[in-house]
Image 1 (spheres, helix red, strand yellow):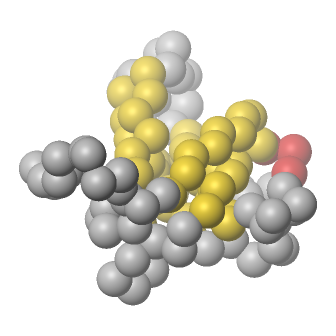
Image 2: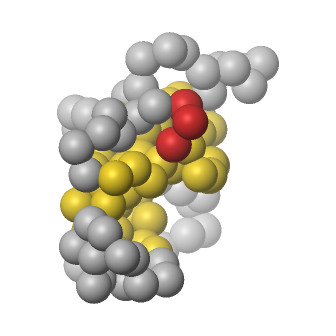
Length: 110
């Protein structure tokens, strides 16, 4: 829903030999499926070499998410390199923000 404070991407990776950065940028899709060049937000997590789990937090700007479909680009880079380079993109996800249906009970964040 538009009032949801954040969307989380939780992940597990194989043990890393070196520390790495996991990062995400999210974009609102237009009605034709295209996105702007400027992301709506970004998050970066530095993961030590021995860690196997982590999460990225996609936060809304302001009081509400704009309604619509979102595209999330996911990147992995060695520490010290530019986190959002196209060569380091390893995946993409999508999510939608919609008004709650009248029959749905309210969602309480925990």
